Length: 232
Image 1 (cartoon, rainbow, N blue to C red):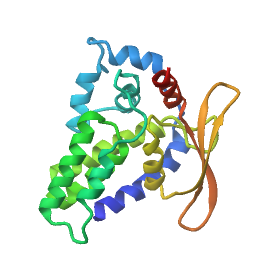
Image 2: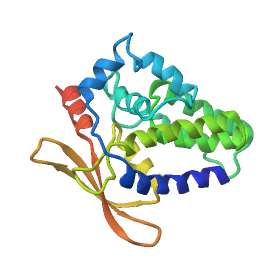
Image 3: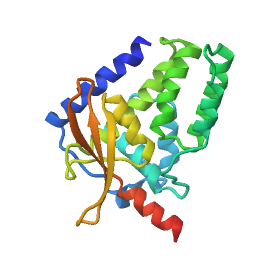
Image 4: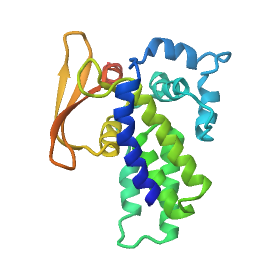
């Protein structure tokens, strides 16, 4: 549990660190799509996915960006939720889950991640459940921790969330809420904004643990484009 708490402390530090030291870069989805579909490219998605699932610590920020944003260029991209979250809640609907219950919950999480490997919500579940099943010093726990960190840094590389110009680019609605949780922000309200530049944003009214209020901007253009395709 200590390592899980430490993750959130590191997350808070990471936001400030990226804001000061990183030149933010919006994902070029057309370029990423071409690269993750090229078998000769180092970012070829099946090859990259194997490295991600193994929590390969030699991967760079560009690998993180391609694994996260590349998923949104694949044919089975689905930006909205999963019924498996309800199934997971049902499995864990007990006051004192036993180890067998935690193992069953981990099975639900792994099933979701096999279909949706970049879902940050389920990666966060995996960290917590792996700690219960394997222990906080286990390889399974550390790998789960590293995988969520990779996705987190991919998003941080795109902005600091303080404006439309520096919005966090996300590919799944639930990732917005997971990221807010990771950086210690509580959502208080939300507005969907279609800007003049053709981009779409979720603008979240948030509050930190000390009651300070602010706004966080999430660029959700890729999600809105996918919805247009689905409904057409």
